Length: 424
Image (cartoon, rainbow, N blue to C red; front, side, top):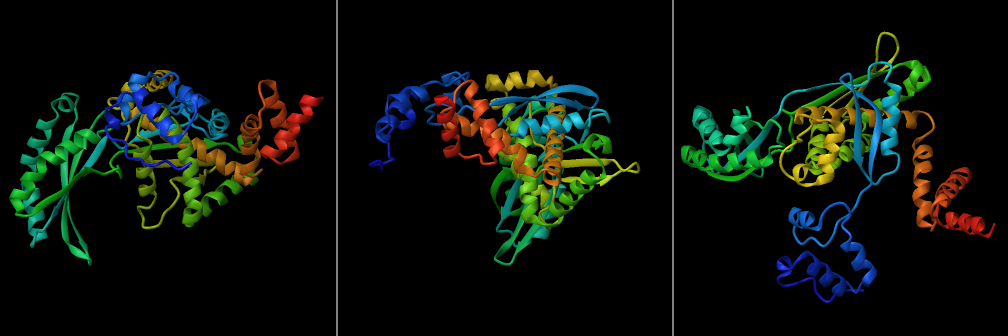
């Protein structure tokens, strides 16, 4: 069905239920669809309505828990929100296989974020660069005045850097970076406000015109790191280790492979970022930009062999996440996820995310180096296919098992299996 028009005057002024009814009417859907959208699950409709514009319902994603994790000598349970089969199991398996060697060791470079102020229409950009640097103390004063709460918690302005960017298609631009310690906040609102406050001063000093005033999601002053060791006994010997190393080397030299390799890492990272109400898009953008920092898109992880022949893995990536503000505070499930993890700071949270990313990468590389990625993934995906075919209760497991045995995980085959089971 094609709707007459998507122009709905005053739509945002309607209540959530009125918006939902209007959409159901225009789209020609039935009562069943309306009732489904009205069920917002464990997120109160009023909260959902306050989080985004034009809300009509919620989209529930399964919340699982990864077990076996030891992070910095501490046992942890990791809530993960994802719709993709095998992601949670991958983290569980990787964590189990490195428990005897101490689990994951993590660190953090700091909690610094960058806001950019773009200056254009300056005839003498290098001269302007020095003018801005000379006024660092004034910039600091203005920045810190914008957020006294951040200052109270030990954060605030830390430094500036000024770059002249030249492009053959346009006149040079002068870009000022405000470097700000955002502590337990992700910091987007704080640094954006500072950039807005400083921009008129920069324009006045230089005679140029300030344009964009916005944070950078390439948070390379806020790097989370994790490392772990997997013994040969734990992973199945030298052949498995060498297969993992070969798979990693492929990803590190070929961007076509690296894109999928890093996507797998983000399967784990984004799932726990989402579970805690943090910004998945910001973390993903930072990760992929950082992976290309050398001028070629590469692996976010690094794999080596130690002197005993064991497999060692490392990850380092931007991690702009927080504990205050946004859905982290307003979404009840996000708050519960943080409680399950026992997180007490944004740094602790970011370091844990890095450990999850490394665990996810290990499992993916091991699967690729041994049985292939499809075997384990399809075993879990078969349950989804069974449900799609109409299986309920104990039927789901039986149908899924038969699909895997046949090596063909398809809905039509699942329907045949289900019909046969019910006739029998």
